[in-house]
Length: 220
Image (cartoon, one colour):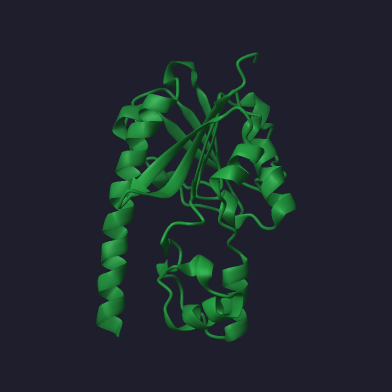
């Protein structure tokens, strides 16, 4: 079983790397980078910012995270700093940023009220981008669990105790809390949270795997 788990984790890592590469292509095309100087990355980490075409720009990138993150040296002209805080109640004004950015975070922030608050913060940027997995994709990305949306909550937790590519869940209560902490969204929910935004679909096996939301506040 350890060998099988290691094999699956390697495959998932490669799959994630390919998805990230495709995402950077969309990011370069979907954002007007000439108008971007300051970036607020909600829930982000310096290690995410690896695209050389972006980092050659004189960007000031602020990663807002609940936990302190190690700084990372980057090539080019961009700087990446970390601020500790809650992205649903940020200690900085998102309206001061040319781009508010979020990659696979909104599904982790909490209940419906927290998700709505996170979306409100995101929308305050002059431009904004958000990416999140599709609830109805055949494989849940956090647990690599096929057809997860068909399984009852308690069965999901039981599976997580046995099969989880993240840290080991020692008790059923820990596994249940882990399952309850993730709230994947649908396209319809994103349309309601981000009215007027452009939603692009990232597909795998011709199926919608995740969504990318691009929006702007042209009046600012």
